[in-house]
Image (cartoon, rainbow, N blue to C red; front, side, top):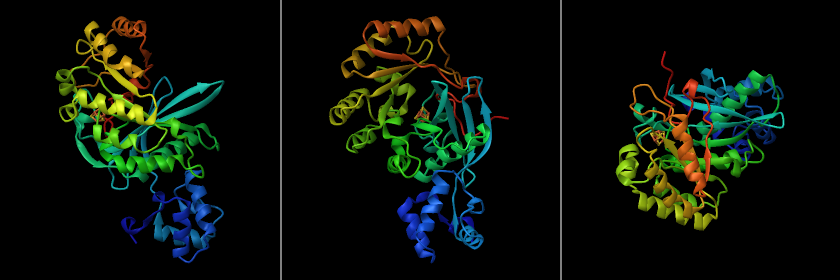
Length: 357
Ligand code: SF4
């Protein structure tokens, strides 16, 4: 049996794994054992599942697979951020970024995952958007990034501890709303208390402004955080930076966000990349204040991380500070994001499917 015809167990929760064991003539509790190996120990080889009999391990290996993506390469930043280049079953490559955060001597990790191979949106400042689109990821491939990263992390830390990754942000390669169903499916799987068990409030979905997706998310009754990559407060500029704005102009986007806030009662986060000479003037800050203050939104300012071959530049620290204080003094709930991993091209907008040699 080749890999394609084998049953993918990463698509399954406990109940489906029990059913699967039933279907191959094994007791249902075997499904619970395998579930534990996959989701608690991030094991993908049946031969490592030491509480299964030798015969069952061989049988499972013939019939099934657990496609946790392989980490082909990793790069570490001086700030502790790590970027993983992962290979999927069909040899396509994606990137995930793991960002440490410490509290009371305890370090936990946020994982930034990809939802597509490449991205069809084509934002002009983004390395991913400039390298084209190949395909959507399936939910199990998003889950696989979490398990593959957790496994890598444990190996490096020589730890058997479970749940080092406590937060997941859908901000890697791809526009999550253009792969909506699979993204939502993966959130329920991440959230499963018997599985990876990441709380919904520890999950963020970021969109470049896909109104259809925002409207659908508003109906889901999920406690996740919605983040909007805004980056411009006029349609003229936003059309140029984020081509999706031509389909969903700012008026429509803001209307949909207002409705989202009304229906979910949740605060929305706006990401605003600071691009030197493009969107960081005083009048840009004023427009931002007018647009976002009434929404009681959180605003993350992100000094742009330069990408080789692209025209955009990072503003000086002084310009960044001025912009930040302007918003702060106007009463906007603003944070200057301490950008992680820029030295390894793992920061916002720097991901692309492969390392340049
Ligand atoms: S910024 Fe996001 S939506 Fe825009 S091209 Fe890059 S990955 Fe796609």
